[in-house]
Image (cartoon, rainbow, N blue to C red; front, side, top):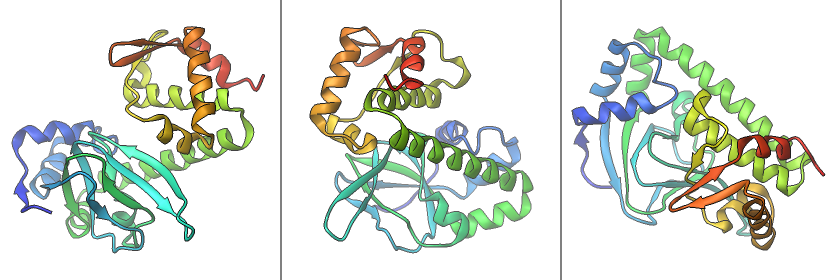
Length: 237
């Protein structure tokens, strides 16, 4: 890691983009901003490993972070790819436990770092932060349940449709309309790990979606037919 640099004023907008912080009052955000520092990692560098002490959390400012688990046999499970505005390592920071997964920089990464000590101090003085954390953790449980349901109960077309709808909802919230645009910054290999299917199968479903204009490539984004995708997400035909 490079030397830590005090947070710049323009990074406050990154804090506001984080789900857990976006509804907090200005005094709480200002307190958090005073205790956050920026750090950098190079491509491929490990940010932390499973079992490490959870002494800090990260908020991605630039770049992408790969969160994964590796079995004793060397098989990797991709948990998620974190990008700008996403939190990483927050669970261990909240409870003081150890890291539950590995984190590595996909490319060059810069992130805002909040130590567990500072987080606990701020939470003790601003109860609204504790309330926001509880709501955030409840949302994680719901999202995990949805993902497990998708893997266990739905075919690949439905799983991919549900994944796209989730990504659109994360990016646009309630503003998603009938033809939202989405940038899916994942390889087919990464999608296959997310959805529990081989790359050739993922490729066939993507081609099918494209032929039926459920997903239409427009330069660097996909135009999504949300009504059609919702219909597929609820069907196993």
